[in-house]
Amino acid sequence: MNRPAISAHQLSPDQTQFFKDNGYLVLPQLYDADEIRELRQEFHLLVTNTADRPKNISYDFMDPAEGYPLDPFNPKNVVGIMDQTLAEDFWFDQFTDPRVVVPMTDLLGPNIDFHNGKVRNKPPGFHASQGWHQDWPYERHSQPDLAAAITYIDDTDFEQGATEVIPGSHLRGEWDTQDGHTISDDAVAPGSWKVLAAKAGDVAIIHVQVVHRAGHNYTGTARHALINEYKTAEARDLWNNRCAFAGLPLARAGKPLIPRIRE
Ligand SMILES: O=C(O)CCC(=O)C(=O)O
Image 1 (cartoon, rainbow, N blue to C red):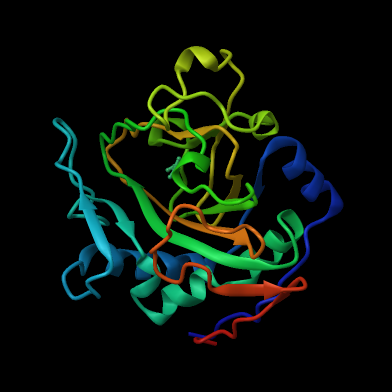
Image 2 (cartoon, rainbow, N blue to C red; image 1 turned 90 degrees about the horizontal axis):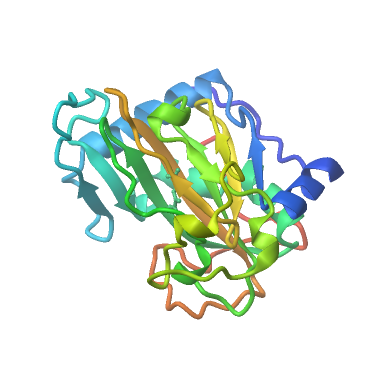
């Protein structure tokens, strides 16, 4: 396939300010229609060919939810994958894409390293048990200069389990939790959150301290997303990150470092 030239663009000052104030930013349609088609094809292979993979890639499967069909796009009901970054060259290019790395330099700082990569799916009838949380307690560093890029593979609105965020919640630093991770529903003011209704090909960037949660999928169609996380080189890992490509330098002085494998 002829791939379009990749132009890594800086964010506008308004976008940078929005992230600073709100702790999240949506980059609509980062991928064009051909790229979304290819992303979906590759993703389908990732969730169907689950056996012939490097051992370090781990898959989680969800038991079919009662009263819901299996989705032929994800017939094994894969609900999660860790380290999809190891699967193929396509997935290496996906997490090193300058169209995500360069915005990270605008939002976090000029020197960006990789943190980790995973897949989070919402099969039909998926019930999100995690609740409101910050990513921070799961991935402590010397400073909270990390962000996740959620790439949506499908259109995902409220009833399909859209991501929900509390704008500005990162400005309060670390929130109290019930169990080290989960923030009580009582701590969240009614109506204070925003449903990030996404289109396939959108990317939402989420600050490590913004309070957010995954929604439930009430429909018979699965929803799929990749979550790649990035950090500044200055943020030192205190979590003992053993994930694939952890700490890989991706940008220095605002310039992306990694060439494309597949042009
Ligand atoms: O799947 C989502 O919409 C959000 C996932 C999430 O909250 C997380 O992985 O920390």
